[in-house]
Image 1 (tube, one colour):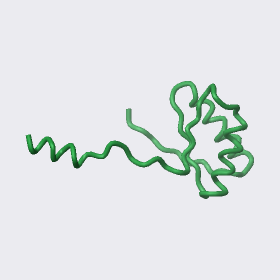
Image 2 (cartoon, rainbow, N blue to C red):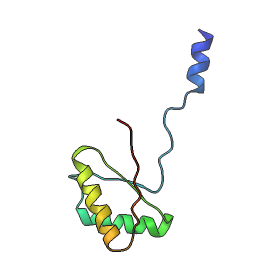
Image 3 (spheres, rainbow, N blue to C red):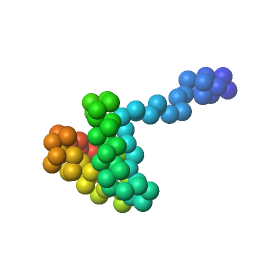
Image 4 (cartoon, one colour):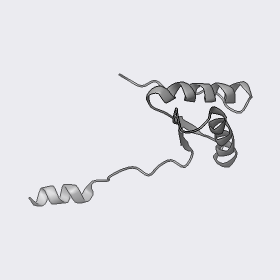
Length: 82
């Protein structure tokens, strides 16, 4: 029983959220809201991370392409194992 209590006390519930991460939704905001927000984050943090799930992934790709085509961003690819 003591081992279980010790394990619970040593657990971390969640990692702190990154300050330069934008979680993109497909329905809540317009495309250019995220483009302008990403520009502001890059001015403040010099780097921005765009994050999305499901149907919002296409919105993230579009935002990233707009930023890249306007010279605000450089493409950085990450591969995730499936």
